[in-house]
Amino acid sequence: MATDHSDQAVAALTALARERVDHRFKGLPPSAEGLTVGELAAERRSLFTGGFTTPVLALSAEALEHNLVAMERYSAAHGLAFAPHGKTSMAPQLFERQLAHGAWGITAAVPTQVRAYRAFGIQRIFLANEVVDATALHWLAAELDADPDFHFIAYVDSVRGVELMDAALREAGARRPVDVVVELGGGEGARTGVRTEAECRAVADAVGATGTLRLVGMAGYEAEVPKADGERVRAWLRRLTALTAEFDAAGRFEGVDEVVVSAGGSAWFDAVADVLAELPTLSRPVLKLLRSGAYVSHDDGQYRNLTPFNRIPEEGELHPAFRLWAQVVSRPEPGQAFLNAGKRDAAYDLHLPEPQLIRSARDGATRPATGLSITALSDQHAWVRIADGAELEVGDWVALGLSHPCTSFDKWQLIPVAEADGTVTDYIRTFF
Image 1 (cartoon, rainbow, N blue to C red):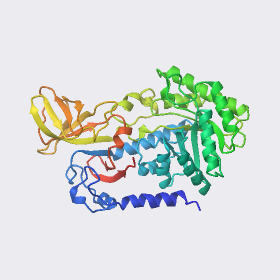
Image 2: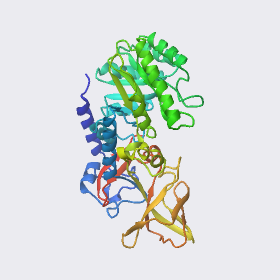
Image 3: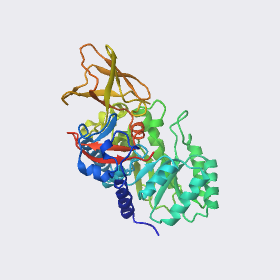
Image 4: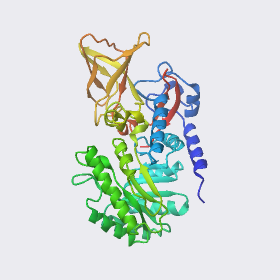
């Protein structure tokens, strides 16, 4: 019998609060050993004086809430449903907050993420990827058959992929068809996805010939458009909507309650909103599904530069929520210092961390990290260049802004959520 989402989610999240704090969790106070996460949160310790050890990653309580509200308002204002990409955080507590702020469901990238979501009661999952793994499809068939309220959608982009899905689902004895959308690729040289309209029709025909799959719409990822700019992205989106309308007119969505058209990462959601608003009236309701994920924490690099709110500031803004606090452990030369955080602690795949604040080890006073820059990361050290006139002592704490949320969350299993004064009010558990 299917378990009600709210009951399952509450039980699973409650279990997270009962987890014991120990050596597995970087940066947490040694004096908290043996406490449950819930008990530690209830103590409301200070990030700076409550026994936390460096390096320690923290999320801003205020920025998280601001970002959740900002995207809820944006999506609602543009008539978009929202399935934020969960791969960014892999944090069920954040999923629950996203759902509470109006999200339709949660997007996944691979079947193991779907399994994690289901363990926390997520009832609507959009898998923005192809699935041809027979074992994963056997599990999915059983999950769909066991829970009639589980709503799942996945990509398809090849006739061969459709054949493999069909064979695995027939072997599994699937009783419910798996809903799929044809993925339109961004163009030659892009990532996954069908390259031409003719190939999209062939894939759709292949889906229609099975009894195990059901075509429900079209989707893709506009950030993969080569040399993406506003004009190219909008042109690709219009191809997506034109194919959706064509497939509807041709009766390809027979038996479907609503047609799904989905796009939208964190760099072009303004273009997605504009073009999906142009979609003509179809034969049945349309679920216009946005999938931005990085917004929840935002960042101090990649998405600070790319967010559409830079183009449409009147519609909102996002605030960076991450700060990685590290400590100066060495000043071996003039102009050079080393922090005790490195590649194991900080995202570095797109940009190096950015020094933002210094907290004095002498009196706790904070000041801007003017004159400091990170020039390299070792496994456990950050190389800091110090400009003439800048002051930095061994023992000082330095707050680093991070770039690329997806590779920041995945380095930390339990992340303190701190208010502006440093009071830690919660701990976010991740599952990578």
